[in-house]
Length: 390
Image (cartoon, rainbow, N blue to C red; front, side):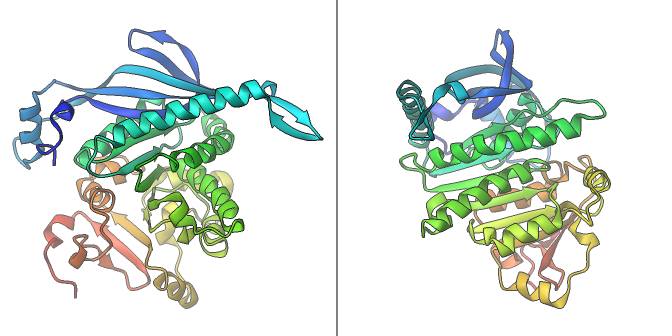
């Protein structure tokens, strides 16, 4: 896939689109620097990620096709170019007949920046044979760099197909109370993410949207989608069709199980994406801590700790588009980053995002059925490829 990319894209550097409501904390040689503060604007642009040591394009293509002669690369964000900014403050509003509306000036600015954003995304899509956009929403204690770097890794792993975008919200406060700050920042950003998705699906040429959310970002993403789901259904629209939502991936979700059940079943959010894939692990230490902090019965990220009733199993089996995958994988990453660090888990992520495959060895995703509507992913993933299902 890398070898088949257009000539003007055959370069080791990776350009990742970004949208952020982090406050700018200064400027450096590479461009604007964004911190964990909450901004009154949404900034968007391009961040360039370089490899260290820097290979030639031919060397990189060769290395990516090999299981041997492995070469590790560091990642460096070498350039950040801000293309536009949407200001969202009370000063842009006025009262008309008792209703708040944008002033004519702010509305004109909004339309101008919206056009810039659409053109930025369209210009990238126009170069792609695959008209897919992949949107990554990070989790707790992540910096702007963390979000962009993981987006670059994911994009490279799927053969640099389509367009990749990092949505990076004001997380990374740090310290013993950092989780609580980040949690409230997640609530702050929902409005921005929701409005951005509404514009994103207007981009000409976009055929499929994939949303990949990790950790605390799963609550951010699903809440924004919940609000869109309610609005679109009230208009009599088919949500999956209106959002062009091919995949919703929830990796190590920091999301209360009862909240998840309410949203995905009672509010029918499970029908918003053509395919919803949830990766969870009983050994996820960060989710275990979150359970303790908030007194949850369990969070969806440790779903394996809860037995399903026969009624629940029947419901899950009747909605095959919701794929619940237990990850019993070892090595290569922390207990909370296993989805993106373990080779077996990442291979399944690639099969879902790049190839849009469903579960089952016959589909190229050799997961074992638990027999209760959920699936098992282990380090034996590669050994199981090509084996018939029992």
